[in-house]
Image (cartoon, rainbow, N blue to C red; front, top):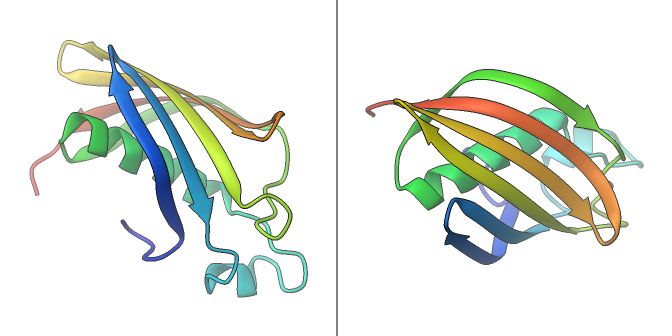
Length: 123
């Protein structure tokens, strides 16, 4: 986890190329003190990192995001209002790359849509 204690995985499953995960956002994480004081908002780059980390967990591989497209932030994620997110990822292997399509929801609200291409890297 790149940002320690930012989130906790509440549930996680990976079957037939599909990841379903529920995460709990730590509203007291120091990142929210600067983004933004009095009105915390989950930084988009942190959401992209979470998607990468969940994909790495499912594949048991270290990944590098090679390309992203169709990144749409549909709603602000305020951890004081909605601290539980459900991420659904579709992971497809294509040659030596992994294509990932994600939707992130807060209850019934679509918060994020994302498509990315990752390659495996050695650490």
